[in-house]
Amino acid sequence: MTEDVLPTRDDPVAATASELVGGPAGSRVVSGSGWWTAVRVVLAATAVACALGFLQKAPCRADSFAENVYTRLCYTDIAPLYDGRGFGAGALPYVDTGDWPALEYPVLTGLFMTVAAGLTRVLGSEGVPDYIRFFDVNVVMLAASALVAVWFVAGTHRRRPWDAMMIAPGLILTAYINWDLFAVALMAGALWAWSRDKPLLTGVLIGLGTAAKLYPLLLLGPLLVLCLRGGRMHPFLRVVLGAVWTWLIVNLPVILASREGWSAFYVFSRERPASFGSIWYALGQHGWGIPDARLNLVAGGLFLLACLAIGWLGLAAPYPPRVAQLLFLVVAAFVLTNKVYSPQYVLWLVFLFPLARPRWRDYLAWLAFEVVYFVAVWWHLQGLTNPDLALPNWPHSLATVLHLVATLVICGLIVRDVWDPEHDPVRGLDPESGELILADPGSAPTPLREWTTRFETFRSGRPRVVGRAPLPGNVR
Image 1 (cartoon, helix red, strand yellow):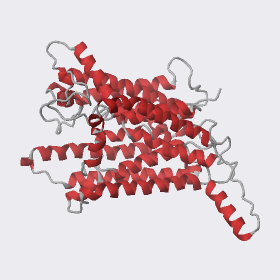
Image 2 (cartoon, helix red, strand yellow; image 1 turned 180 degrees about the vertical axis):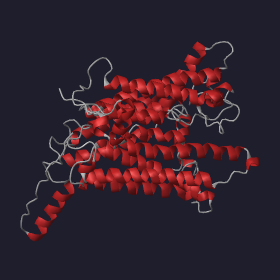
Image 3 (cartoon, helix red, strand yellow; image 1 turned 135 degrees about the horizontal axis):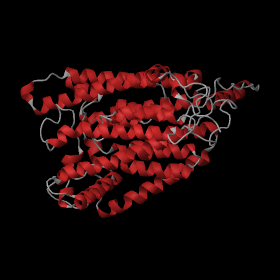
Image 4 (cartoon, helix red, strand yellow; image 1 turned 60 degrees about the horizontal axis):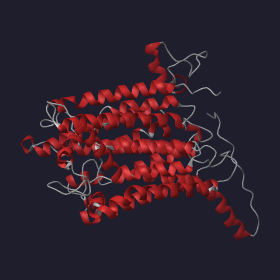
């Protein structure tokens, strides 16, 4: 049985921090022995982080989410939407209409909210308003989603379960702002299924994730690139088949019942203007904004160009990239070019970080800039709701630029890891891809090199020998 990679032996920051409790693990330490396995320790740390996240929202909960939610940094979408989208009146989302806007969330998230509303009515108690009870129920359900997602992440890299410990700090401020943890759990499950050579299950989980939040759909791009590179398209086709059918099964009943209600999320996403946290909003605050009529084209065009560049990287790199590396780059490209960056979107990258670049120094530095943005965006909203404060726009704009630059730096490190795996903390065979792509990542030339060779052979009339790259050293 192969021993787990221990962070105090592998990560300089973890090794330094371990001095507080006796220093790095010695050569006689056997990982995974005893009841407290790595996965159980990581899950316990996640549970503590979820509890701290609830405490972080406690000041607003104590005031019924009515006052100072921005200055206390404890705002959440969850409690206001209980009555704001008709759940308090027992309305069925997308179908029942009333004195409330249409639910602007995908179908599976709407089902998640409906289940929470049903439990709220069943568990209602005297003295506690239903919308607060609704928040409490969602906290429990979202914390369960976080634990499931962490379990998937810890199991995706079989020898590196301790890397999932990085997730816990990123949950404390953002776990209960919105319902993103539900979609994150489905995305993490899709990566786990791919690592276990289950392409159909991968597709099913992508379809469910896309029915909860669009961003899990982005996983299809990296899988396409790696399957093209490996010359194994059958697994990818099974992924697509599973994703399409699952998405249709979930969405079709709502489409048939109320097409207008079902489309509210997509209409809202298309028509919303530049908003908080995006580079477009920051530019607009200082007089350099892009007209709303052209913003979708500009933002979408830049995202498409970024995806094409990432695809080229995946095909041209000397060694096949890891799934999580390409996925992190694609999700980051979406974050960088999107019309809005809600604070909870950081969870999308928090759960990918341990798989894409498991280095505590880089993670904590990046997370620090995300915390700066977290503070800045709530104070900016406070200034918008209370003009008497006369808060300037530049702190929010500066925090936006800082978090975007920090994300770009991490992307740069991952690109370097892809091109030169000697820098990659997870070197050698891709632990996220099982046996689906290539048994030996150094056993074949890259597709772009092979296509170039064929063109040169055709042009010159002489065959050209393509050398095979050796595996990078220090395989883990």
